[in-house]
Structure formats: C-alpha cells, structure tokens
Image (cartoon, rainbow, N blue to C red; front, side, top):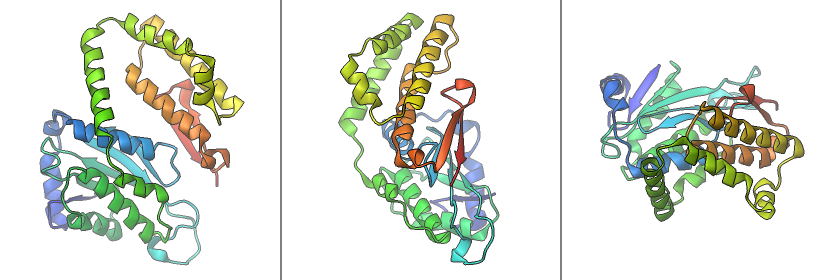
Length: 278
C-alpha cells in the first residue's frame, strides 16, 4: 500500500508520516464544523452509485473511497487491448489539527504511478477546504492516468460551502440531541413525514420510476417499524440523508440509462451493492 501526506516530501517519508498519525489518536479527533460541511458536500456529489468516483464511508478522522476507471480506460494512456483496470481504492486519515495539518492519503496498490499522484499533493496550496482540493487533484490526475476525460462533477468541489445553512443545520442537530432523549421523538418525525402534503411528495418523488418508488416506500415502512420495535439502525438525520441520496440515484440519467444498478441488501438503507452494467 502506498501512503502520502501532503506535508511530506514523498515516498518513504510520506509512509512514516502517515503511520505516525494513525490509530487511537485519530479516532478521538474532534470534528470541526468546516470539516463536517466538506464531508457532506463530498457525499452529496460522489455518492456510492457515482460512475467515476465514490465515497464509501466518511467520518471526521477517516475517509474510504474508490476511483472507477470503467470501460475504455487504459493505464498510462496505453492503447493495448485487455480488460479495463479495476477500481483504485483510496484511504484518507485526518488529524485533529486539520486543516493546519493536511490529510494523509494512501492507496491499496504498489503502482508507482499511483504513488506519484499522492506525492504531487504537496503542490496543492493550503486552505480551509484542503480536503476538497486534494480530492479534486487526485480525481483529475487519475483521469489523466487512465486516459479518461475529466468528469464534470469534479468542478463542483470548487463551489462555496453553504456556511449559513450548514451552520444552522448543525445547531439544530445539536439541539435535537439535547432536547430529544426519548425515541418517541424520532417516531414523531416519521409520522410527520407520512403526513406531508401530496404536492410535497410529488415534487420529492418526481422523476423516479414506479418500481423504485415502491422500494423507497418499503424502506420508510421498515424504518418506522424498526423504531416501534426499538431496533434503530441509525439517526434520523443519517436516514434522511441516505434517502435523499437514493432518490438522487434513481433520478440520475446514468442509473436510468442502465449504466449501473443499486441493490439494497435485505432492504437495508445502510448496506448497498452497486453493479456496473456498461
């Protein structure tokens, strides 16, 4: 596995820097509001069904993601025939000193071309959204390496973070955690969702096929039943976010065009299988 930190020069020095910062210290790292907003933006753009780059998991101290070259990709721009390259799995460790201390990246490969991409992150200027800029550089360089056109979604990483809206959401979330000690409040949330006006549901579900709408409705019923049974899989906020991501996938042209399929394991919103079809 190749590892690189943007504050290191490259190579073995980067590996040593990454190893020294991983472990229990990272697990206890407090999450800043800025980092939370960066992570939310990343997950909204590069969801698990994205055709080129996918955020598998993201938390304030660690990110796991993968680059999917897909059909037509050739490492180094080679025109030789053969199966397309497999996914490039990338990991990121974030210290409690971020953004003063840059993210530390590693890749599950011994390919020197991939290591060189991580080493070039030292060229990225420091800033408040260093995580987003690192990922923009990584994705762009990987597209060049595999002779692929730059994906348009990469430019979305330059958009300003919605500071006021995000800050208000975080404050509301913290207040809910303090003022809602009983699970009955979460159940009320689901009951209110079911009582939304028909026009609101129509807008929310617009552009989604009947078969997929049935899946979404089944998930809602399962989530509500889980709360009634006391078997909660995740927070209300996490569930709402994943439901929104799933709706966005069902609306996307790539999904409708049959480029990939999304399967929910045992109808669980927290366990997806994504299959590339084209």
